Length: 116
Image (cartoon, rainbow, N blue to C red; front, side, top):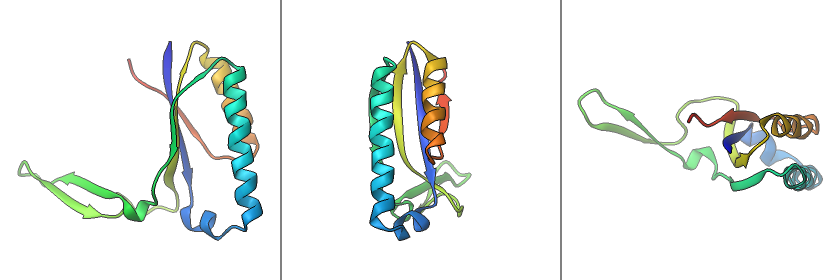
């Protein structure tokens, strides 16, 4: 059994500005992804949206053994990670194909296998 992390990067401001029907389209895409994962025999270990990046707390080493703590995202980028899926599977190839179909519906995702 292998474990994969599927990251969901997105431009938060653009998503927030979309009309409700686009949000519903996104929810439907995720619901279909859940069904596709289930049908492929993949197990969702955890899944969830994240709070907006402006509510993040960033922590970096300060070089003296302490940390510099700042409110807000780690970096200023157009996209932030807005959610994730943690998936257990016996079939990484099928999981990749399932993710490709999900992305083909307009979702931007990053698929990464957890190191063992």
